[in-house]
Image (cartoon, rainbow, N blue to C red; front, side, top):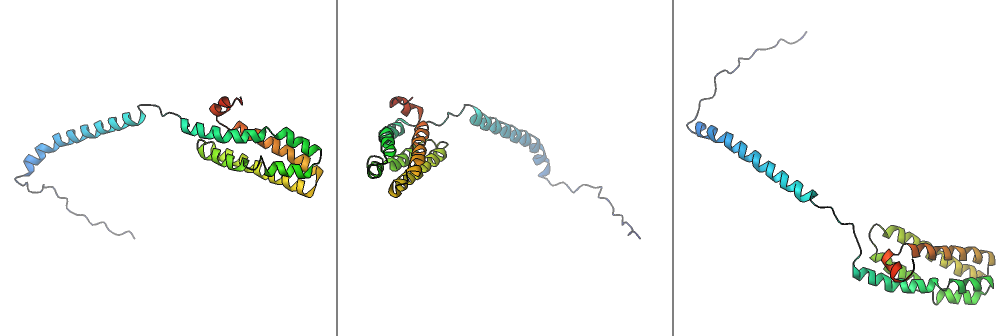
Amino acid sequence: MAPAQVSRPLLTSPLPASPLSRPLAALQQPLRRLLSFVLAAMLCVSLAACGGSQAQPPSLSAEDIAFIERQAEGFLAARDRLPELADLVNQRDWTFTRNLIHGPMQEVGRQMLYINQRLLPDDQPEAKRLAEQLKRSLAQLDEAARLQDADALRKTYISVASGFGKYAQILPAQVQEDLKQV
């Protein structure tokens, strides 16, 4: 069975008015209008401040470009020695292959690290990935020369040459232009 509803008497008489309620009631309407106007004005100002101008795309400073250029010069100098490395690989000259890797090409990893630190944040993950690939390929090339494995040496040289080319492409356009790499 459903419980019976209890009816409650409705309050029909208002609360007794205090002497201050009339002046407050008279101020309530103008205060609401003023508050609405202030909120609308604040909203307009905040929207205008946020969307008034287009944000400039991130760019490298002149100092960053100069720093990257200094590091890229060493990187590109090592890249320019790839034909010499190819001759050593083709001749199966194990000793001089390793000497070239540990000599003139030794600083490539450090140079790429410094370049990566100055690149735009969006470009850094790809640059780091390419740098790691190139360093890994150079280590594999060194290991193939140490083991005197001609097939591995040839295959790994292709990976090294490709790594230099790919990493050179991620250098900022201004750096490539300044270093006449375009």
